[in-house]
Image (tube, rainbow, N blue to C red; front, side, top):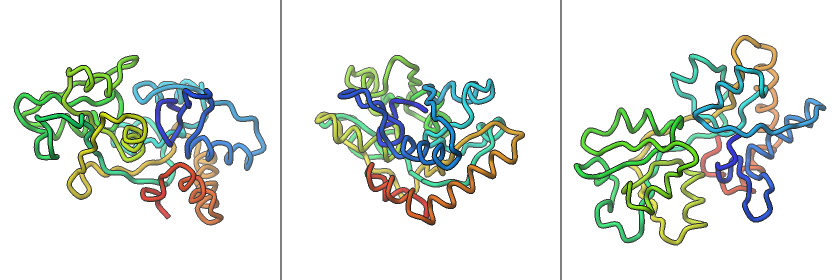
Length: 224
């Protein structure tokens, strides 16, 4: 899990506790299996290596289902879907609406390894793409003026509104960058993948997924 993913798998800086829909779902999966749960912290640039190396059994951090990832990972059935939003400053004069993003002189930040990286690399024709790698953050690049806007999804942009009074969300055109989110496991273990899918189906049917989504403000993007 990536501990910076607000509402998904997030280490709350106030109490150092992990919280989010996929923290709840991981605990529910462990309970179903009758096993001890251990969270392995990673990021989107490295998680496939960790899964393939056997450092963890499953990536539960709202993993976007992308063709490049599907070459290496096996995906569960999707459980959420989100378009891609822009985040800029309230006083930005360069980016006011979505059509202002792909313009000459605009720098667009994305986090390395996230689905926004290939999306914006393929979308931008005039703006400059800035790929941000840890420990640097997209929001810090925007605040410092090294980027004019950064791209993220519904959960992360809700965090920006809740925690940063300087942030302004730029709504995308309908469906822009909409991506299905699922859990990722190593290829070659059909039994394990089937167990994960059975867990998801049960969680949808008995309300476990819906309740977790409601707790973390994600009801608008869950798949029923």
